[in-house]
Length: 529
Image (cartoon, rainbow, N blue to C red; front, side, top):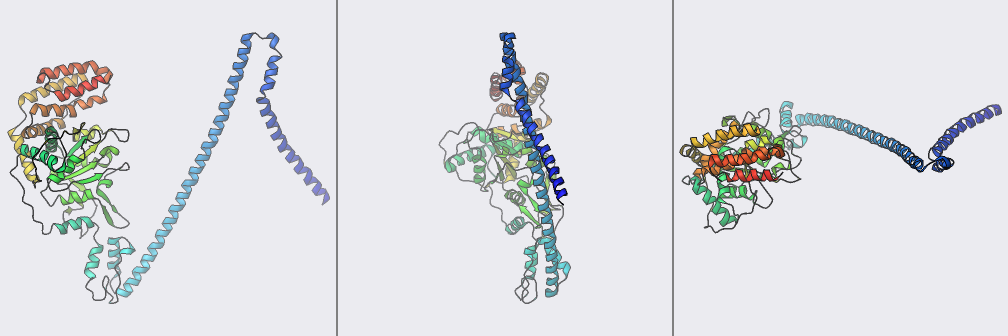
């Protein structure tokens, strides 16, 4: 045994000695590499042979070599840190997978418990298991299981009177929309003021804002608002804070005695479920939003329904509002349908046909947009489908007679729009000038008007004129916000001189200074470079 212990001691001594030799040699090697003093002495030993520029080269060489060593060490440390971070991420992912597995096991356990409760309920109530499973399927959770009373009937306290009500209540997956159905069962429409004209409507609304809400807007802004809503269902109010962007559609709801619904857009909004809600497969309930409720309620009345998308570009509009943008572009309003659920239930809301919601014509969407570092730029897709109203200054106070709100039917406003298009069609001379301007812009800037803009022009200009405005002023505003706005995407430094020529061409076509809005916008573009 002593011989073995002596061998084992010598064995470990040699092995540990080898490890020590490695560590010692590494230390000696590092000391030799970074022994600056030795390198300096080496250089001094040859000082008699060095000129001044040799010393400069010596210093530069040492600095360069040591810089390479420092960079190499830095890369090694960085690589180690990235590896550790990667390992931490892998560990975190494994933890998440383990948690998901635990949740899956919990779901299986709860399912087994539900089946046991079902079996117990069948034995106590005497009804079939299929009926109870139907109740569970509609309510989605064991919490919604109707109570078992002493009399043996589900959902009663013994007399059986509550059985039907309990089963029916458990099947409602659209609670708010079903409440709207009940609200309008005995609905009597109000007496609408269907004698007001477009010009009177604009002036009356402006005076109402002033006298009742102490909000001051230029008459041009009000005309643009109503004219814009004749050509599109989406208005974008943009400009600096404090100019009354949100207050304008809010006041419109007050004026029409039908308060606007405000949807405060959040940065996390990514799809339409944020705006209209979604069906929860676990609870078997639809998470209804106020916007969805308002859209559904609009199918019952002839009121003007205003929905405000407040701070609409704090998230990307083309994400959460994409489906609505497509629906509102369909030529046939009967096709303006939004699919809410893929199947139908017997107790679904009355106006939800085949799980689809009809978007009524009497809904106006008004979005407010700030242009700062906290928001996203609104894309051309959205701008082309909407009408933009710039509110860049606060309204100037003025005196107005006390003006009460009014019940004005949407059908009446829509009829006013149709009458305006028949009475004030866009003159041929204006369309000829638009065609010439279109060719000029295509040749010089490679920007086209597009059929959508021409279509909106034929609706917007007549209504603006019927509201008391000048048709050239309407053309001016529409071109500035719809066509020349696209110049921002061009290289302005290269087209600066061409913009000057475009301004002169506008004066030639429409008269000196007639297109003031377009010229002011183009001048701002020129001054940017």
